[in-house]
Every structure is written in structure tokens, then in C-alpha cells.
Length: 125
Image (cartoon, rainbow, N blue to C red; front, side, top):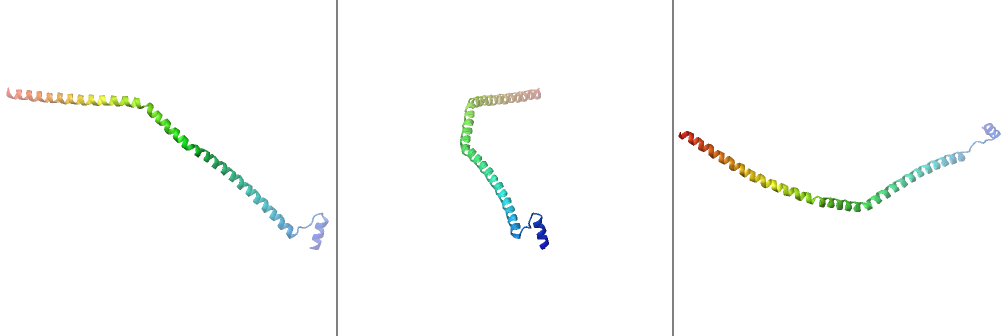
């Protein structure tokens, strides 16, 4: 083993001690942990930006709902005259339908009476 140490020394390098090996391993783990923490930090920042965007939208949401309700009310008011016109048309058609039904019923009654009269006339003849 002594010859191995001397040959490593003669080549310009030296064999690493247990301490140096453990130190390099620990430095490598710290570097990986640092990279992982940077990744976690980047994800936290991304999440923070998303939450800020949601908060910004949410704070304007009640205003947008109120504006939407106002627009719907305006549209409803604009169509109130059209609705009134159709209601009048419906009422007129309903009245005409009832009057037509009454006229039709009277006509049928009159026809039935005439048929009854002609039947009676034929029987008596």
C-alpha cells in the first residue's frame, strides 16, 4: 500500500483521504439541494403570481356581476314595449278566438236545428 501511495505522489496527485471524499460527497449533496430549493422557489413564485392574478380578477368580479345585471336590466327594458305589443296581439287574438268559437257553436246549433226540422218534415210527409 505504501508503494501505491508513493506512486500516486510521484504522478503528481495524491490519494484522497476519507475526510476529503466525504467532504466532496457532502458538497455534491448541498449543490443538488440548492438546485432543488431554487426549483421550489421558482414554483412558489409562479404560484404567487397565479394567486395575484386570481385575486385581481376576484376583486373586480363583483363589479363585473353588477355591470352584467345592469346590462340585462337595460336589455329587458328595451324589450318591454315589444312585450306589451305582443301581449295586446295575444289578447286580441284570444278575444277573436272566443268570438269565433261562439259564432261556430251558434252556427252548429242552427245547423242541427235545421236538420232536425227537415227530418221532422220528411217524416210527416
